Image 1 (cartoon, one colour):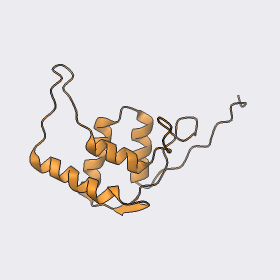
Image 2: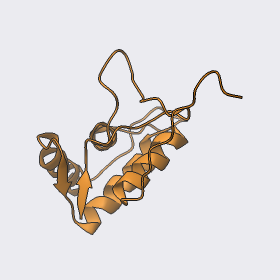
Image 3: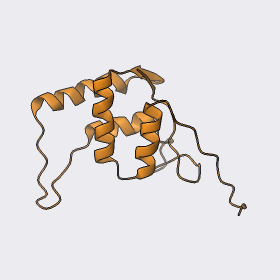
Length: 118
């Protein structure tokens, strides 16, 4: 399945999500960040263990995606892994929802809200 990586994520107002004066956040950013993220146990602070196979699978996906500008061809199992990691590591329901819609080819950009409307 082809995934368009350059799609921009939006806030609930329809404005592009911009963090720390960087370019607008794209689906590629969300995927790469989710693949790189590590999870800590909330009680102990210890890193959650991942086996070598899972780490290498994530590494292969990072290499496959990082140099692509427009789109990438992904297998069903790769998409499943990516969606699971996005759900696990992204706190915002807007980011999770939009990323899933983009991956599934169902995303429609929100109309930007005019501040003067009621």
